[in-house]
Length: 552
Image (cartoon, rainbow, N blue to C red; front, side):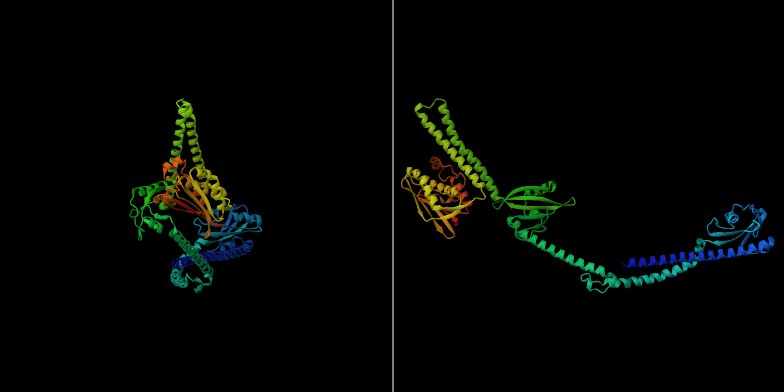
């Protein structure tokens, strides 16, 4: 800034001196030109009167180095000239000042030399005898005046520049001293020029704005760090060379790494080739995904390229735990395979029986037996399909309309429906307990009780079987218990009995016509009612299914 002030002062000094040269030269030239014009007019007036009375004799007496007189006839012939021989001079009739004088009485003109450094002024007057008397004088032009003043001006300019250098150096230091001592953090407390007050106010305003923006950025940074820190998903940010720029605690836990791995290469975290290949694919195509098994869990690596202005800055790696999703996908495949298998068995039986009847191989008296087999297997298929549809409906039913439902009354109704089946299997059904009212869907609650009781009847002892249904209230809700004295469930299979198509005793289940979906339907229906199922069982002694629901 000091150099700018210095240069500005020097430029102003030179500009002022140059301007002064031109102004003074112009003023002097104009002054002397006007003074000469007045003198020429006076000389012409005096000479005109003398020539009128004395003629050429007056002109011959004039001896002047400044003024030149020329007497011209009406025809333009030079009668006399104080500087040259009149007989050798050309006709002046077409001279501007002569023509004007013959027409108007007086005339004037100015002519410049070839170098434009001298100017000759002519004044002419018409005399009574129609002759013209002209006077002229030469003066220097403005350019010549400037050239004449150039030498003294250069001297003045040199002296002025020396003084300007000293003054500019000192003045720039004095000007900048208060500016250099301005406290930019608290500009309004600084002593400075009044002219800088608006600037200092703007700086103070911007300081406050910047401070607020910094605080906002820090707040957002803290929020982002808290979000990243508390994310369940793993997060890794790497540069194009694979150097780790950021990693959150979840990612460290997933890879079972302790300590700071920032600025380390990604291979220190995972050395697998599939991750390196996925990173290359993301850099080339913008995105890639892989799944990896880590410590018994399945994680999906979602890798996205990060670019700015066409340049690749790195990649963001998100790690999602998809173990449940993968398990669900596996269950779906198993479910599809199981459905296909469960449908294939009765269909083969139906097809075989139908082919035997159609081919006439079956005796007339055996046709009802084969028809009964077809009906039985078809009923099994219908039951299976109905259960599959029911499970699908329960999977899709997120919100259900609930009304007060009494578990005791629903249990009594189910016992009435299954009483004949129980008697045919020599199983005793009983309902005990108190009224237990909850918010639920009556058809779903009845279906839960029906499936549990029906299942207990199927797996009860052939003789002397007993199924006891109890209802009542407990702390915070109501309960439903279905207990039998059947074959029981092995302890290692208790966690799997609610899986679709899972059977503890597959041969017994097929003989009894079960589809393997009853307990899955129970599990879904109870979950929709925010209930919980607890199973206790002893092999050879029986099983108890305890369901607890929230109260009304």
